[in-house]
Length: 440
Image (tube, rainbow, N blue to C red; front, side, top):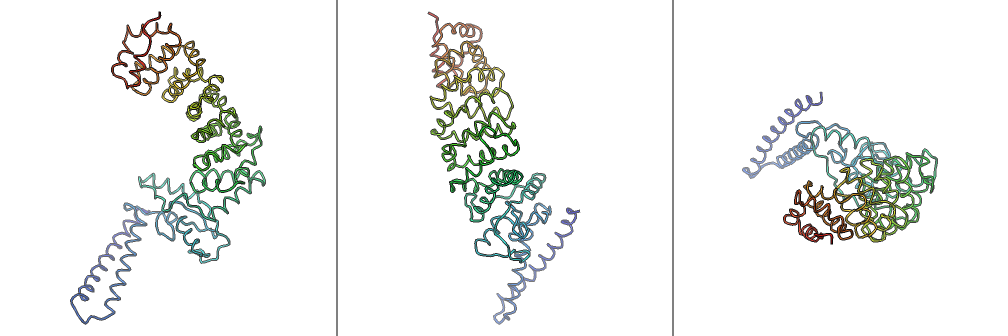
C-alpha cells in the first residue's frame, strides 16, 4: 500500500513543481524585460521559490529511490531519516544532533507538542534505531551517517549517565535495567565512553553490583556489566584508568573463568583491549590473567577462542608474561590447536614469541612440533605462517639437533626448506638457511 502511495503522490508533486516553474519563468521574464514591473511580481517570484525549495526538501528527505520512508523514521526537525533517535521528556522522538542543538540554545519546549519539557535528558530510542537499520538493510539503502562528532558530550549526557550509575546502588531490577542500558549506550555512543574518564566515581559505581569472588551470582547482570567494561576499554583515555583501578582487572580475570560464554568472551576481549598499553600488560599478567585465558582457548568455543588467543598474544609481547604463559601450559594448548587447524595464524605468531623461553622450545620438541611445522610450510599459502614456522623450527633445531633428522627426511622427500630458502620472505630465507644441516 505504501509503495502504491508513492506512485500516486509523486506525479502530482512533479506536476505542481512543473507548473510553479513555468509561472516562475514568466515572472522572472517580466522582471528582466519590463522596467516598471510591480513590486508584487517580485513578491510572487520569491513565494514560488520558497515553495519550490520546500518541495525539493520534502522530496529528497522522505523518498529514497521511489520508496516512502516511514513517518516514524523521520526527524520532525530535520525532516530526514534519523541516525541517532532519542526520546525527549514529552515522549516525542527526534534525531539527537538536531534536538540537542535546540536544547543547547536554551529552548525548553517540545517542537512538536509545544509543551514545556520537565528535563533535558535524551533517552536513546533503541527500538526505532533497530527498525531503521533493518528497514535500510532490507532495501539496500545506506544507513544515515552521524552529523556530529560522537566524542562531544553534553551536560544532558552527564546527567543521564549519573542517573544510570546511581541505579547501581538501587534494587536488583534497577541494577539490571541500568546495566542493560549502559551496555547498549556505550556500544553505540563513543561520547559515553569518554565520560567515564571525566569522573573518579564512575568506575566504582559501575562495579558496585559485582562482588569479588561472586561476580556471577546474577549471570545476566554480570554479562551486561562486563560487556560495558569492554565497550569502555576501547576509548584510549580509559585504558590506563581501568587497568590501574584495583578492582577492574581482577574482576575481568574472574569473569574469564566463570559466567556465560558471552561474559567470558567479552572479559577476554576487554583484557586484549586494555593490553594494548605496555604498562597494562604487566598489570594484567601479574593479576593471573594468563591461566584462565589459556583455559578459555583450550575449551574451544569459537568466538571466545579468538578473543582469548589475541589477548594471550598481546600479553606475551613482554618477557615476564612469556614466562607465566609457559608455566601455565600455553605451549601444549597452542600446539594442539594448531595441529587441529584452529586459529593457525594467530597461534603460530604466539608460539614464535614463546621460543625465547628455553622451557617452551624443549616442550615444543617433545610434543611433536617439528612435523606439524614442516607440514604448514609445505602446504600453507600464508607467507607469514611459513615465516613463523621457519623461525620456530630454527630455534628447535638449534636447541636439539636430533630434530634435524625429521627435517632431513622431509628435505629428501619434498625439499620443503630448500624451496622456502629460495622463494620465501627474507626472514623465512634467513631462518631456513640457518637450520643446522647435520647432527654432529
